[in-house]
Image (cartoon, rainbow, N blue to C red):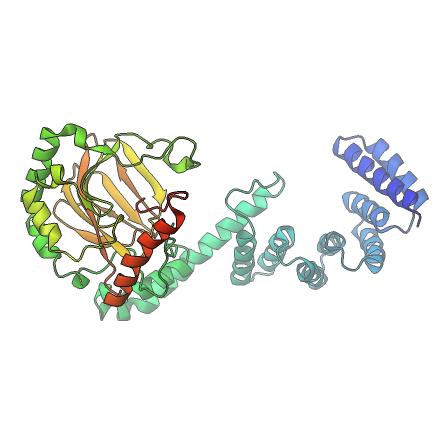
Length: 432
């Protein structure tokens, strides 16, 4: 076929589709007849006529036309998708499934084919199989994708089927696991329980995502078990004294509490636009980027002495960092990740007015005054103060306990060396 004929046929088909979409059916038919005259056996012409036959209630004729078109273009997924629709209208589920499988062989992530295949399994009463196919369909669409209006009901139905199946699977597992759960402490089962919760859609599995330095093969957890940090009870026992030092220091030196987020203008960090340079989240530093802030630490001698005894990360120019974190009323710290998993972060709540939550990965906890925890801040985390008063906690970093002394020495030497290599031409991030 000459290039001019090919161009003419494609143009006529496109015009016919636009006319039909606008409700101009006579004009659409006239244009289709012209296309048939120019190329009666052209796959686009056969497909367009097949669609008209389907719309007119003649799926048998549509099937014939589509099979002719497919013989010319066997790798055309759209033709095979329309053939599956014709077989569905004819009530032949086996042929419909074959046509859908042919589509998915060509385009494994074809959303329309996956949704129709799930629907076919539902019509056959194979609800579990349908849920599995619908799950595959959902995974092809990113959260930011805006689906065509015609697909939205089918997509929502797929979501509903998957959620019902997950809930039924969770209930089935709960019944099966009841004797096992009764025979073991909850903490002993935590990882397996998280795996099952992720399988049934109740939780996600979050992985470390350091913004600067990722040490591979380190054990990773959202919140770490207290047993790994035998110094926590001593820290918690001093909560009253630490709180008193904090309140006195901030009262005497209110200007010492500075915005924790302080990026220069022009940095593309949309997540921080509401908190950048804002005292809604402020920090009163005792140690900052490896340096003791004497004017502040001297006001808090008990706190400083306790911190000095701990296995704090120490990297010249970067760690340790320790500060009182003050989150204003009705404030939210958006989801973010920290710079390196070579350290862990400790929170000791000092002033908790209630309605103050903290999420790390899949687990959300309420802060409780005097109850510390240790977490990996390279796993996505966020915080809320929904109360009518400020919330204050002590935050500091410690080495990841799985790092050997040699690994700590390497990092302590390497990170400043990286900064020296770039000679301040590139910012080497040392804190969030």
